[in-house]
Image (cartoon, rainbow, N blue to C red; front, side):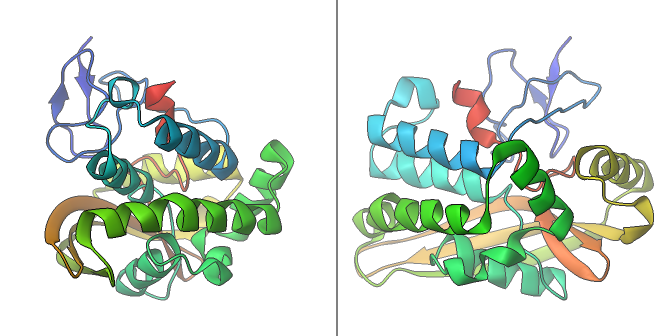
Length: 240
């Protein structure tokens, strides 16, 4: 059965590891849209570090080197989550934490239910998370950004379109959040799909990238998730 992108619905080649339309990592799913993810941010970060160190273009499925590191970083961050009082604020926090390395805001990347899940299943405390991501950012992410764009890299994101997630997808998302993270369905108030344009500008170069993000409102706070409802869905599983 042909693969279907869980994010935008585009048809994929059988051996695809990224969607050619929106860039979303391809999970081991079928056209039914099923997507089961195990683990947490510990595994995602560890695998990301390993593959950045190797700079193995064949296993990563993209060009190696600084540009490849940046593309892989974009794939990693578009499926991570950051909370806020609105989707726009969630996006601002998203940049601060993941692209500017402000680990002091890490508590905002997921609701309490996720951290309970991460501690129980991954032995991942907040202090461990902050330490791992701080090292990742300083040793690899910042270097990759500066090597690609030069010093003083400035990153902006702009929501160009926003639509309410259709009811069937929203109901599936609530089911997943309930089964995976024990988040009550009544706590999941709404969800939106957003077209987002990222702009990277440094002293030497600049670039613009477009992607699709989802935001979900849980008990009044907004978080970035993927189309299934994963806060941290282990995108590095595509290079296992």
